[in-house]
Amino acid sequence: QVQLVESGGGLVQAGGSLTLSCAASGIIFSINDMGWYRQAPGKQRELVATITRGARTNYADSVKGRFTISRDNAKNTVYLQMKSLKPEDTAVYYCKGAVYRQGDYWGQGTQVTVSS
Image 1 (cartoon, rainbow, N blue to C red):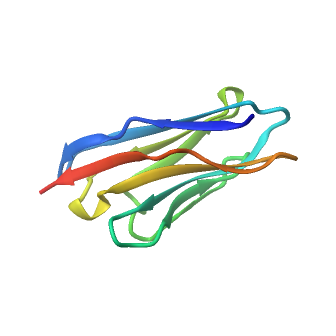
Image 2 (cartoon, rainbow, N blue to C red; image 1 turned 90 degrees about the vertical axis):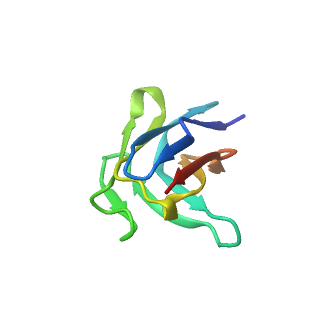
């Protein structure tokens, strides 16, 4: 059974940094695209960043230049390095993995709170 488990969330002051990790288990073949999404209270879940297996990246305009997505294919892990955090980055952050021949899976989410 595929599971994605996020870690690294927490409380940080504006201007600070956090790094999120998401480790996948139960992978039979490989993971194709991986990504980070977030959902703030009262808002829809939105894309933050995605990365292909070949490390091609895509970012939401709101995080470009501040967030960096990366992955370790050997460890089936994706990371999100977040710098210059703003209060509007406060949300539950979810990782998603498109697992080859097994389907799409989501993690349970990790809370990121940025205080002003």
